[in-house]
Length: 303
Image (tube, rainbow, N blue to C red):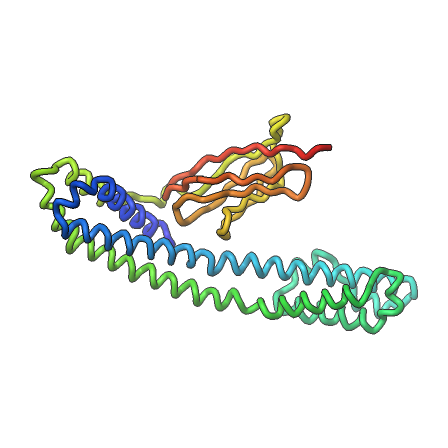
C-alpha cells in the first residue's frame, strides 16, 4: 500500500472513530448510522487485504531465505569434509569439485543452488565410507537431500506471490472505490442533517474528511534496546512483530526500526540467540504516518 492509499485509509479511520464515538448523535439519522456500519465493514476488509498484500511477498521471501540457508549450510558442511578428505588423499580433482566457500553460496544465483547442492550430495555419497572419519553420515546426506528438495520447491513461490499481491492490491483499489463512493455520494450528503442541531459533530466530520499527507512520515516502530543491569546497548537483537512478517535487527548502538505499513495494535517480540531472556511487549499501538517509539531493556541470563 503506497503513501496515498495509507493517507486515505487514515481518513476513513478518522471518520469512523468520530462517528462511532458519537453514536447517540448518528442514531438520530438512521440512514447515516447504517452508512457508518457499511463503511466500517469496508474499512475492515481493506485492513485484511492490506495485511495479506504485505505478507504475500515479505513472508514468502523470509521463508525462501530460511530454506536456502538450511540447504547451503548443510552443503557447505559436507563439501568442507569432502575437501579435507581430498586434500589428505592428494585428490586435486575432487578438491576442485567441492571447493565452495560460505561467500560462494551467499552470492550464488537461485537456479544454481540446487544443482550444486545435488552435486555435493552425490560426490559425498560416492565417498561415504571414506568420509565417515570426517563426520559425514547417511543422516547428514539425507538432511542435505531433503533441504535441497525443499528449496527447489520454494524457488518459484515468490513469483507466484507477486501475482497474489497484485490480486490483493486490486481488491484494495476496488474497496477504496466503494468507500469513496459511499462517503461522497451518501454520507457527505446525509451529514448535512446534523449541521443545524449538532454543528460541532458536523464540523468535526468535515474536518475528518480531509486527507492528510502521510508520505512525509513513515509508519514504523523504532527504539533502543539496552541491558537492564548496565544500560549498555545490545546489538543483534531480532525485533519481530508477532504473527506478521515485519522484522528488524538492532545495530551496534542498540537501535532498531521496524516498518509496519498497516496501522493497528500489535505485540512485538525481542529475541537474541544467547545471553539474555527474550521479551514480548504487548499492546503496541502503531498509527498511520507516525513513528512509535518503543525502547526496551533485556534481562541478562544468569552467568
